[in-house]
Length: 403
Image (cartoon, rainbow, N blue to C red):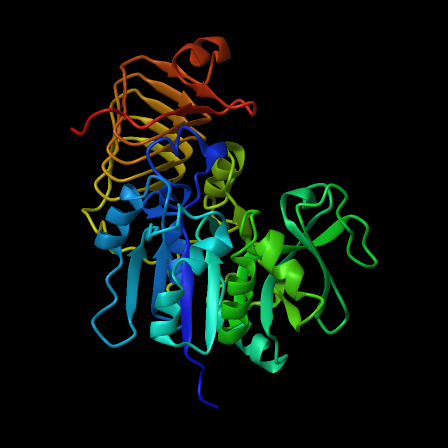
């Protein structure tokens, strides 16, 4: 069977307000993750590893950091239909900034028509996970679906943050509500609910018609709020069980169906912590399904006469006669003698000077932690200089200068 022609729109314009101050100068998909990556690298890697290479990345909010990253890190050749292209809002006559996820695709219908795909994939860019899109595509074709929604079981206590679905035994969606105040539990398990991951496959003509029908509405144009609920009663809309996705190279100790919405400071910190340990919940070292980013090969990290336990260290970093435990250091981070870092994220081009101590801190790029400074030990003192999340994590915004 000939594989259908697939075009992907990656929605990468999110503000990430709950990640402030990490999103003060960049969009959520551009936030660094795991030492050397950006959050957007996960969805792009999933498509490339799945053999889908026609990708438009739709950007909006503070996009320059993301644009620079994609320009340096993502070059996939010059073959026909192999591209990753950044698309800002077109602002044509009568149009505005994107007014929701559906409007972002609607404003770029010309790109869809020019490519003329059979199937259109619409995925978010702000989650951490591995997914074989080809398996979801096979499910979509096997069910003869008009639309397929990637689905994940979540705790009922968290379900109000997601689009919640009701599906029949064959996987056909018979009910859909975006962020309901009283979510419908899964049949047979009142503690769980079936949620949308915000990843969709559309048959081309169905998508075009749905966007044209939605365009005259005065409300926000959003797939979860307007498009999907409108199509469920009329067409074949199916829920793809993400938990059934099989990724080669996954280790037995990893969490099955690992997927994280890293939209808050605590969730972002915990997802980074999930990369650590001899048997991490989510192992980035998987050559059969790598998370790709060619931007920063860099020199190897150096550890000199130091105590280092359960730490990830980016290229070009140096730890000298210091102690670092359960932490992630980005690229070109220098930890000077006598410094101590514990359960913290220290991003690229940061200097932790002699004798400084960090505990449960997130330090954005280009910072200098002064000699002897203690962060994470006195909440009142930390609050006078930095952002202190209600969880107790201390967050330092991006530093002002390069060095």
